[in-house]
Length: 137
Image 1 (spheres, rainbow, N blue to C red):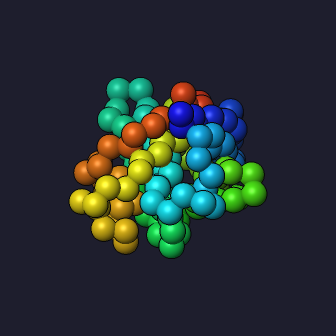
Image 2 (image 1 turned 90 degrees about the vertical axis):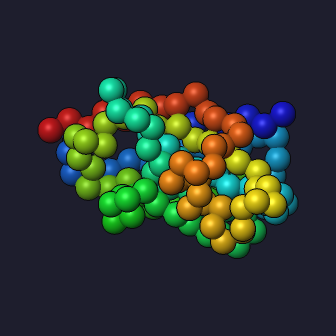
């Protein structure tokens, strides 16, 4: 059974930074060749938005529109954890942030798997419970 535990949210002042963590249980990031781990967010009254994604085995990454300059996704294989680093945060970044995982099928080319997830074309198979990020002005 795959389980994702996302954490690290909290209250941040505008211009500040944070690091969200997604601990993966159920498969080992370094051993499983065809997965993607993504971060989504959803603000009250708004649709869910893809923030970033990283895929195996080549580490392809994707980012939501206009987010690549302020968010960075990274992986710690030893800790089986995927991180989302955010900086220069704005009040508009306030949302519940969710970690998600998708196992690649043959209909998704390796190089575009992440882009398909963050764009909403492909739906993740597993979700974390979410962690609230609030950016104060």
